[in-house]
Image (cartoon, rainbow, N blue to C red; front, side):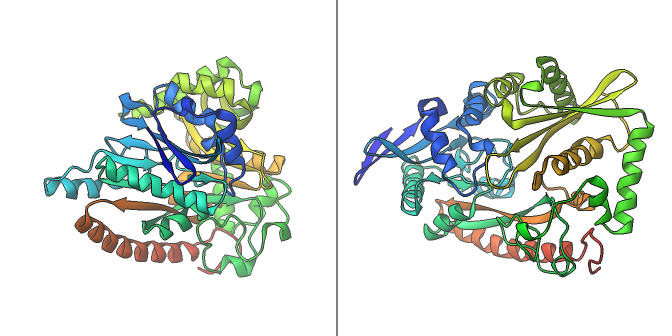
Amino acid sequence: MKSKSNDYVIRVLDSPGQVNAADWNELLRLQREPTPFMRHEYLLALHASASAAPETGWTPRFITLQQDGSLVAACPMYIKTHSYGEYVFDHAWANAYAQHGLNYYPKALVAVPFTPVPGSRLLARGAAERLLLLQALLHWCEAEQLSSLHLLFCSAEDLQACEQAGLMLRHSVQFHWNNQAPTLAASRAALPPEGAHFALGRPSGEIPPYRDFDDFLASLSQEKRKKIRQERRKVADAGVSFRSAAGSAITPQDWDFFYRCYERTYLEHGNAPYLSRQFFRMMASNMPENWLLFIARRQGQDVAASLTAFDDSGAMPVAYGRYWGALQRVDCLHFEACYYQPLQWCIAQGYRRFEGGAQGEHKMARALLPVKTSSAHWLAQPEFSAAVERFLEREDQGIGQYLEDLGRRSPFKGASK
């Protein structure tokens, strides 16, 4: 589909492969909150590997805006026939539609499939282009008679455009680790707003990062410090050791072993994995510089693996906890593979933030602190839109109370209880 708005050309494309990769990545580079998961290579791998494709309920409709032949705005959009793999839950909304004889699906989604990492979604050269892109999305959804449009885990700039366009905002909570201990005053302060990724109370540059893992432990309360040491000792006493590999040092055999672990863990929970082996082959080929693998070994055999993404292209290097799996059960192995090994690596390599993924209040005991994340929503049906707006107002009050409660449970020394 192609249309023209003033001097902008708007296109709706059926595949990320129809967008020039260099142009897309350059647009991403200009954003304030880019992540490697919005790179063209990542989105293309999701589609080409059939992980996020029409066969799995993710029909791509990438939207681009061009001006004088140059890409000035773009976003990934999917037509969804279900709500799986999103991590912002609207099943109750779909059920309410069904109870009134209405179809909630198909709906439109602007997100990175299976990847609840906050960041830029509406890629644009400026605020005007971002708003025009969003308006094009809304007009297209209306023309296609879709029930709704949802933008998940948005950046602050995305949210500003969404509010300007009249979309409803919804908030949730994730847990992120910062490579610096908060001050006493900060640990007692209110939690940061969405998108704030610095130690509470001071900008990042004023508090030095941890010297090593013991320095990190020393910043915690005695109870939390003791718990982490006990968990790590259980893994060591079970005879488990770890090795790590990053980038091109991750061999095809390592990737194969990781996928065995990843697939096994999904199947043990009664589900097929979202991501195919071909997806990870494409990551190893097209984005090797963004991946870090930890492999656990016991009695001469590899028994578990965790995969972390990382990005050192910006001013503040960031790591992202992503996937894990195990072939043997070892007490506390999950905590070691998914938190302590990555945190130890982040400290050694000078990475300033580690994002722990969706949900997981238990992460606070490992010094991952709560951060508000946000999404934006438009519903075509006025009565349902009004009902959802009332629901979101009540939910937001609950989120605020939850954050206040979490703020009183800081794992750091000197925090108020």
